[in-house]
Image (tube, rainbow, N blue to C red; front, side, top):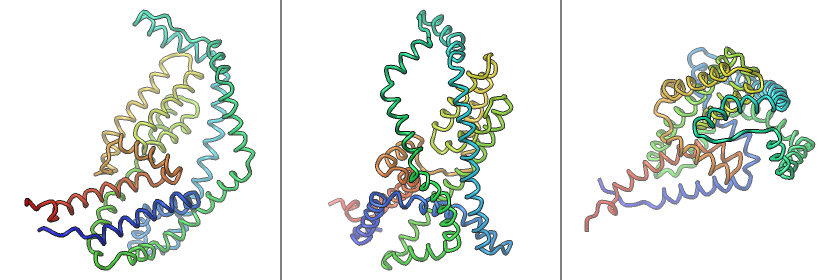
Length: 355
């Protein structure tokens, strides 16, 4: 069936997109706690609804429970991770000569034997590299010190930690009213096609967000247990970090492996433990890509890993932390919009007319 191109829905969609991007640019930083709260409320709403319908748990009690749980996680995870990572960083700095010796013995020597080179790492060379970049390093340290001394930054973080659970509580309670409010903004002349569009977005986005959160929990547990079995100091902390970063393809496993190997070089004298660390991450990578993610996420987001990384980088560069938060949801919406736009375009006279 052929149809004419209608400008009203296209202009409305374009206006909504412009307004969204304008808000992200102008007041994006202010929106951070509310965006986080809305994303969490969207993910948790089916659970809250099920508790309400099946177990007669009132919505406000479920909202309070999840808000307190999020507040606990926001406080507990940094309170545990930061001191552990700082202490391990100090250990790594203290054992830099030992790390260099291990790399020379187990890595560089084999490279030299294989390729006939004469490469070697030396502590003096490392010191010279540090001295050559002393100004840049000093500027970075001054920047970090400035942030540490800036009470406004600390207050802002505290406000976010408190405000996000608070906003989450009211978002869960009023979720149906929020949905009705935005539904009421849709022009009545094309309510039905917009509902179909939102249904497809909801199906894809909910499958990704809820599945990905389960993947993060499962993989964080796996890496924490695996690295503790290997005997790596701070294995739990590194496992949690690796699991939390798995939503960014390759970044989670590579950053976790780098942390683990660096700490392992400063703590272990033999190569057996380092090999065990590699095995833990290799099994984790296969487990995540071949079993956990396909099973939990299902149809996935419709973007390949390179496109996901590009979306995170582009939105992060343009809109900062708000862009990072919204990169995957907006990318999902874009995929669905393009799919519907293609179908709509192929049904128009403009596309089908052969004259």
